[in-house]
Every structure is written in structure tokens, then in C-alpha cells.
Length: 132
Length: 293
Image (cartoon, rainbow over all chains, first blue to last red; front, side):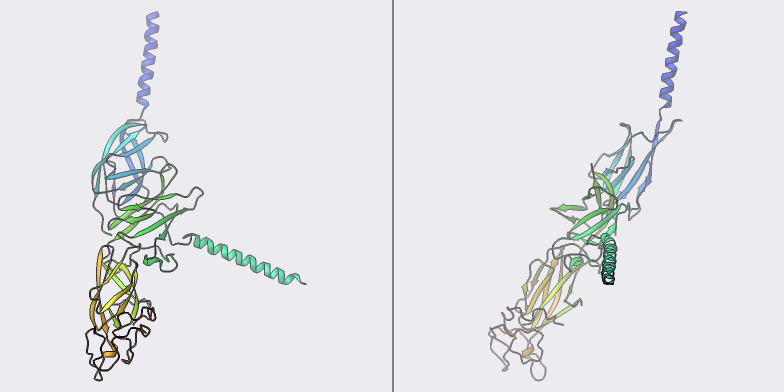
């Protein structure tokens, strides 16, 4: 009887632990919504960011879960440029809004962190100065 | 009975106050300078000239309009005012296409250059793209805003010119640049005064043609200067030409050797003045802004 009780309790805890993990969103990608209109066309997609040097775009970044659980608004999103000589990222006072600035021509990637956990690095291409 | 004029005065005062307030509100966009709304619509960027040589601030240091384009290398300033309450944001370069030069901003290359209005812990609240263009010509103007293709002077005449940096589309570019002015033949004309400024005084020295050289923003423009020796014109209209260095008169007209400078009235074309050929004539500045043309 005692063994049954022990096993039962273990089973319940295991199920709880499993359900806790299963309730976590699973990172799939990040969606960018442009909030500004740059003077030239830029590409801001979940797998590629492309813009000329000297140009900036303001985006809202929304993480997309590929599991059944979605990210909540309280989940913290951070974006970092791996090479600040090529692209810089500036925060806005609104959560999940960022200013992406093409600094000089080159390639780098944009690191995505959710709640402090690195998720992926999105390719970034900064092209030479655009004609005005 | 006696209150009526007071009431009227009070009404006029209040009306004037309201109108002033309304005007101030409208002008507040620029806060005594031309403003352009930030791309996030939070507030306005205000253009400020630095120094005297910015062609957008010829009138008392305040620009009339927000520049369409700024010369590469030109110095300027931007302020930011926002519609909502809060501390004044800083305007900072967004990329190395625009850099700080002391308290001023300078564009380092042609193309777009983004500036950011930031506040608090560096949070960006607004941004603006500026357009930088290379100087590809320097237009030369007189006081009457007539662009000069060729400058025509009389000997001894002094004229004030103003250079304006332009791009290939002849759009005048904003920003303060350092100017260098020079003559390629000082026997024909001299640069009488220049202080790395956009304006210069040139003075006809002797008959002939020479080039005025002006450099700004890494570009050098040459403008032809034709100096006519008015007093050397003979009866048949033929100009004997050539600068006279010995001060002697070859035809009896008193064109050379004048040393008093007092007759440098510039623009004299009747041929009977005694001002020609004076190399120091006009040092008193008389006639210096006659405009020539």
C-alpha cells in the first residue's frame, strides 16, 4: 500500500513536471512589424534583414511559438547586433519595439533572446549608401 | 461712461494676447527655427545653423525652411521638441554617416543619414533621415540674388559675392562650410577680403580676364572675372587692355597710378574717372557693395 502511494505521488509529480514543460512556448521565429517608413525600401523578415547604410527602421518584434502555447506579452524580447560596426539596435520605451540602423556596408546577424535565452541569429545585410 | 475706452483697450490687449499666443503656437513648431516632424510623429526636429556660412541662415542665423539636403562636410545642429511632457531628448547620430564635431553635427558622406532623438536610458523616441549630398558646384551670387556666370568689373571696382554650395540638380545645400577664395591672376583682380566665409569682396585691379577660385566642401569652382579698364577706352571704343603697372598714362586718361583710393567708386563706365589702375584703390571700402551688375 505504501509502495502504491509512493508511486502514485511520483506519478502525479512527474505529470505535473511534464505539463509544466509542455505549457512553455517553444520558440519558432520572430515576426517583425515595421512601425516607420524608411526613405528607401528595406527588407525586415524573420529570416533576413536587409537595408542600406545610414537608414533606420523601427520594428515591433513578436516571438512566435511553434508549440501549442503562445508567448505572452510579459515575455521579454531582446535583439542584439553581433557586429555594431555593421548594424546597431536601439531600444524604444515600448517593450518589443526596436530601431534597427544600418551603420556601414557588411554582413552580420541579429541575435534574438527571449527571457534572456538565446534563440537564433537572423542574417543581416547592410548595403552601400543608397542614392538619394 | 469712462470705462468704455478701458474696456476697449482691455479687449484689444486680450485679442492681441490671443493672437500672439496663436502665432507662438504655430511658430512653436520651429521654436524660432524650421522644424520637420519626426518619422514616428512624437515631436519635431529643428534645424539650427552653425556659423555664418550656412546659406539657409542668411537672415539673422535662423533658417526659413528645413533643408532638403545638407552638404557633406557641412556643420549644423538639430534640436528636438516633443509634443508630450518630459525632459528634452538628445539628438544623436544613428550611424557614422553623421558624426558629432564638437557640439555640431556633420555629414560624412552622401546618402541618407539617420539621427535619433533619445531619452532616458537611451530609449529612442523618434528619428529622422537626413539627406547628404556632395557639393558639385558653387553658385556665385551678388546681393540681388542674381547668379553670376561671369563677373564683370571695372578697374578699381569692388564687389561683394556670395557662394552657395549646390548639388548636381542645383539644389542649394545646407550646412556651414569653410570657403577658400582666390584669384589666379592678381594683376587682373584681387580677393579683397575673405574669412573662410561664404561671402567675399573682389576688386578689379587691371584690365583682363582671370579666374576666381572658390573651394568649399571639397569642390573647387572657377568663375571667370572680366575686368574692364574703363578709363583706357579710346574714342573709337577700343580698349587698350592689359594691366598697367607703371602707373603711366598712355593716352592721357588718368587711369593709372592713382594712390588715393578715394575714387574707387566702382561701376564707373564713362571712362573719365581717375580710378583705374589703382592697386590699392578702394581700400576705404567705398563702393564695395555696389553690386557691379
